[in-house]
Length: 253
Image (cartoon, rainbow, N blue to C red):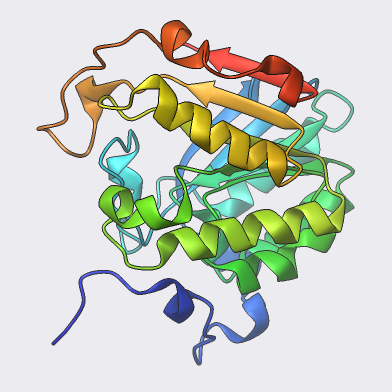
């Protein structure tokens, strides 16, 4: 029987058109572009490139239009590269987001070009494909990783078995690389304070130093049946000891 979405182990297998993530940069499928942001790479002026495609179907996803990997790109990489060439000395970094950017086989080539232009490279990822992520790590200067829940709780969020194991393996890989890392969690509307406290404690014990907790805006969620949060984010987050992290942030939406 066919599966609607692949298992995490499937995502790391190269195909005939995806050997070693070495596709030409021109094949990058782009679903959006922000030419300037001050919030997507800490302390840097950055541009953000949103890539098409995601293997998961998270209930609170705000970027449903980016899920389909076959959607028509909205802009070509050549146009963005030309923009970046004109912004050398004005922008500091380029961040790749999504969707799930690590699934695109052209990403390594594009990141190499970005570094060649003199920009730092940032990545927003949920970590569904650890082997692919590992190949990208030498090209990265900063990573924001979504950790949605404890590993065993992931399938209820993503709709994909074993997705939690992939995400937490990606966490270990990034930590071992020494690349600056921010871990982020978006709070499901039904969560209570003990749920968040347990997750935060597990992350602190794993050595996470920078942690951000984000409110869930259900007005544009992928799951139309997902109701609004009942408990304010600040009240939920009060269960977390900020001293457990070097940097702890609350992000209200």
